[in-house]
Image 1 (tube, each protein chain N blue to C red):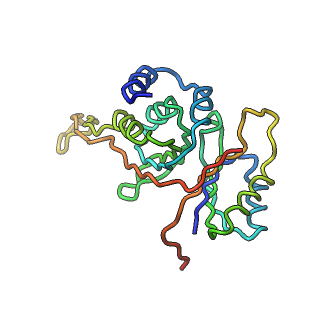
Image 2 (image 1 turned 90 degrees about the horizontal axis):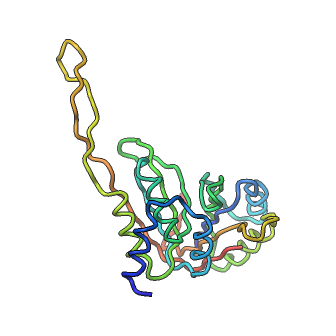
Length: 88
Length: 138
């Protein structure tokens, strides 16, 4: 099990969350700031099976809107290894 | 790059306003090895986030709440390149050192509200560092 922590722009939150949920991923959203010049951002926590990490990243890549400014990043991803995962 | 060199660089940068350019120039080029969640008190958040951003690190703020007193605090998510952990922990320690501050509270039993200084401990930080399996920006 892995956890993807994805920091995306606020404006991308809705389409990205929708796309991930449609693809069968479970997403928890946390409002955050910073990273993108202190603008509002959204932090998504996504729990995925090891073999689905690539697929999740692909969904993120496709659902974030390309920015006009090439210097501004659309998303920052941390993939962390999860020792134990359970849903009760 | 020697450790003492970075140290001096960081000192001189602490008092300067945040520089978003530095953030992208340095943090963007180095691969991130550690993911750090730092819980700091609200009053230390500004300086801590600024000091870390000046190190060229990626910093994200999450507003959070402590469970014991229900006080608001801030969780900073930080991406750390290799060999930056010690420096980051030292910078956080400098900004969030535990200290005693005084607040004025009314003296109990007095007929008039006479304010007296009451010492309260403030500051401190909780740091979690987690290995990053994979880091990506696009």
